Image (cartoon, rainbow, N blue to C red):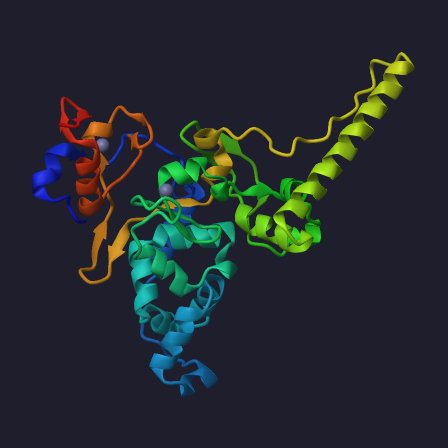
Length: 335
Ligand SMILES: [Zn+2]
Ligand SMILES: [Zn+2]
């Protein structure tokens, strides 16, 4: 692991002492990860890959690089020769070594068919959060995006939706939504608030939004369709309720239509953590891992741009100090 520059060490600290209950901290995923990692070849391969053996190794490696995770994991199970060839793909080797938690998380939540070996490798070796540009210490494994804590816990893009919610919010049929990137939630405890989640299927927010815009032709057409449908449901509900009350019946419960946007507790919303793994960034040139670090001047701050959850690397930390001043008594001071 790479340390911050020695001259910055007294202004920074490596990790928060908080448990965020991410996907890769779920006991089922940890158990699967140790099984996946412990599997080693004790004997050399005795059979080849049949017809595939006619291809040059380099070509086979290129094909495996471009295949999706679900397929390469199936390929790995074919025989010992397949296992050896997959492990010889540099990108897969780096993933299995440095991001095995993400790889096993993808297999566990069944999102491997939407993520290629190459795209996971690229995200492993990219330091910035794709949404805000800060150092991103996590991967969102539903569509494989590098993300920081503040974006994963606050941005709608990283809130996977229940199928019914996505249909309602973007005016889609379940037939369309079922074809979008979806994840299987591994039951367990998620988020710093330790919320329990049962088995369910969630769909990627952005994929559902784009499908909605495509189906309706424009954002405004989609918004109008959804709003009109919601008004009709509300009117129907009010009419039924009035009819029941006019009969003097107070025992019949009429179910209110679900809200378009149920309450989102942000960092307390367990759905935001069920596809998240903590993954350091691999510097391909040096093969060192960058985990980022926190700023001592922001240790007690909770409002952006100063926030205790932000992480930096040396270059971004120097910019941060230049912008908000040096640190005295645990706070930034501009001269
Ligand atoms: Zn971010
Ligand atoms: Zn700071």
